[in-house]
Length: 233
Image 1 (cartoon, rainbow, N blue to C red):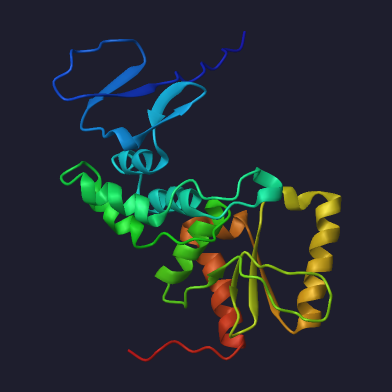
Image 2 (cartoon, one colour; image 1 turned 90 degrees about the vertical axis):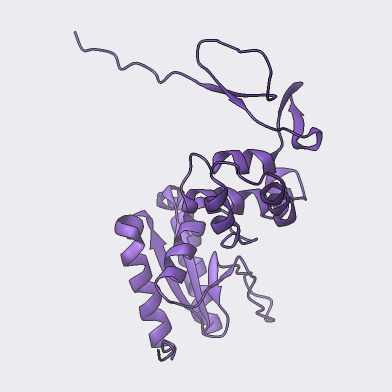
C-alpha cells in the first residue's frame, strides 16, 4: 500500500514577558521579549500581535524580499468592493515605529533594509517581487496600479506596474488568466492599450524563474523600444 504523506504539524508562536514562568507545550514555540500594550489586538476573541508587530517579529525568519512582500501587503490601500474595508492593515509609520522601538531585536537589520523598499500600491506578492527585480536590474522604478487617464470614455485601464512617461503598462498574469472568460478580458485589455498608444508587457509565472531575468528582459526591451537609455556611469 502507498504510504500516506504526513500533514505538517501546525506550530504556534507565543510571546511571554521577560521573567515569566517557563511554558512547555507540544507544538508551541515560546519567545521571551518586550511586548507593549499597543502592539496587541484580538482576532475572534484571541489576543494576538498587531500587524506591524507581527511584521517585525517575522524579520527574524524571512528574507528581505519576503519582508518587502509582507510589508507591501500591510500598507496597500484595499479595494472596498472586493475586501469590504477601506483602510490599510497598517502604515509605513507604524512599521517604522516598531523598528525604532525595539532596538537590538533579532532581524532588525533586515527590517531596516526592507522598509526602504516597501511601497504602497502593490496588489500581490508577484507584483512586489517583479518591482524589486526591475529596480535591482538598474531599470527605472515603475508606478504601481496607477490609472491611465484616457479621457475618451473607453475602457478604464490600471496596469499592475507602469511607466507613464514611456507609455508602458506591465501586467502580471496569474493562474486565473487561463480561463476562457479571462482570456477574452485580456484580449480586450490589449486592444485598449493599442487604442491608447501604450505598449503592454505581459508577464507570467514562467518569466519569474531564475531571479525574474526573463521578466526584466521583457521590461528592458520595452523601455529601450520607447526611447529609454540607461544613465551613463
